[in-house]
Length: 172
Figure 1 (cartoon, rainbow, N blue to C red):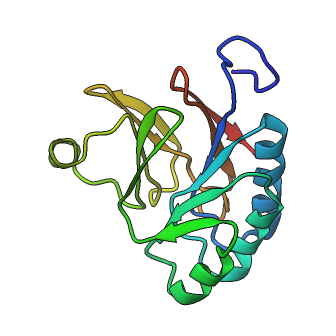
Figure 2: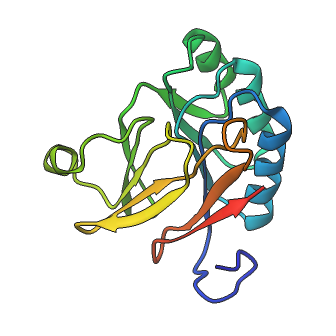
Figure 3: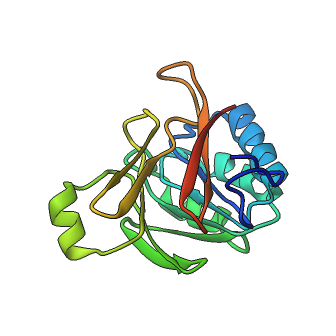
């Protein structure tokens, strides 16, 4: 996928990150990737850890939708950081964007029970710190891996083209 207009690119992209764990340098690199790709939405699947890390996303020229992760203890501060930038809420968070239904969570629920309760086109999750893009029963499952890079030493995000559901893991 070429965010500059190559094969597979059909319009505004969606940037996806998770498990940034206060790594400000990695979050700043993710912001540059998302800005360069022309993202019109950014999703964060939890584990900012502290509100100051979320504030780095204010440099984006698009809204951010996020959920709390298991390491996000300062929820009131995170909600404050999101004022005027987007929305952060308890998972799962379902919404429509670009004609697609998204489910945003931190933990990935068992697939069969999830699909029975929450039909969607794209399910975004984090927590495992391992990038994953796969399809199952018509749903695109995306784990952008760990943006922070603390656990495995590799900082990653995902760029998603919502028109054709093409997703690319990008190493920062």
